[in-house]
Length: 401
Ligand SMILES: *Cc1c(COP(=O)(O)O)cnc(C)c1O
Image (tube, rainbow, N blue to C red; front, side):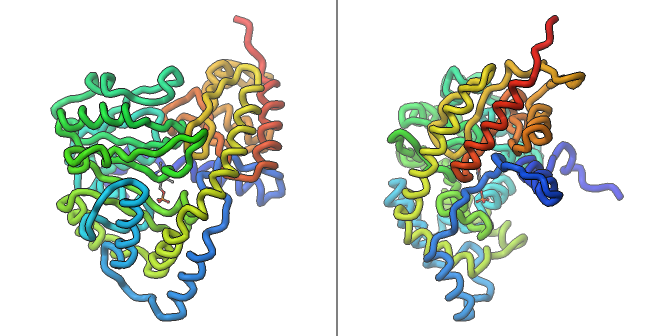
């Protein structure tokens, strides 16, 4: 049977792939350290669990409004005011089945075939595939360690064409940990206004910040930029609630109501029970994530020290999110016995087999010379896993040419 053309060139999520491969190895009795996971290892907040159980017991188990129940949208609106200095009314907010689903709805309503979307690279691997799934063309803005993995407004000029429709910002970034400061965002906002671009601001890691950094939402930089920005956020990362599937988007009413139309013909409302849980989580707020981020900060420092102690590996200290993004370009071209390491993918496979550590290679994020090491797991696992990585990488031999 011939499947739809839009599937061409689309791959299943590689982060989920390596985790399931690692799980298979673990099931066969191998002691695998998982540094691939893209989710916090914390329990979901007590209040969220409590409110979900109560929702079930009280029979709150039917369809809700497509765009989310009013008390949840009101709680999100309050959060956006207090935490992000952003004012949105009820019909400028849509709750979806995860932030990934919010993004998907957004691509549905924005893109016509051939429309271009600017994506800073390395990128979260879902962005380009979602753009392609809707006939759009991802246009990558290269960044590297020299600029702290951040794009600049000046750089963007090179990539703009009459087909450029939107620009994606993901600060703090998965996979690089880059955090944009207000001045850089102001310049990018001016650029978006001048070139009539929509800005998609994925702020899912907003609270995972280190060394006293603060989060700035580009939408908060004035009415002009707010009018062309769609803020994407959710409870998955902040409240360790990945499995509950609640995310949301806030933005101009015409875009949000188009997203509601799409959602009404696909998933309908997100789970009524999870929506109640989300209210509980958002009310618990800061008390929950402050404790988690403090722990992550310790792991980050430890993991960074370990990675930079490995010969031929360098690693910028990430400013946010929960990943380290070591540069392993000096290991590309090395070999062990008769096996040559030609990209990060091969090194990640080697590490899984040799060190029994699961790490996602940079390839699907647009960088074949980096690895993405998640520290959303216990200190013991980060420490033990990176010790094994150190030993395994030291075995790789440089080939005399
Ligand atoms: C995890 C993640 C998301 C979305 O997660 P959901 O569970 O779908 O809410 C969005 N953007 C980035 C960059 C992520 O890493």
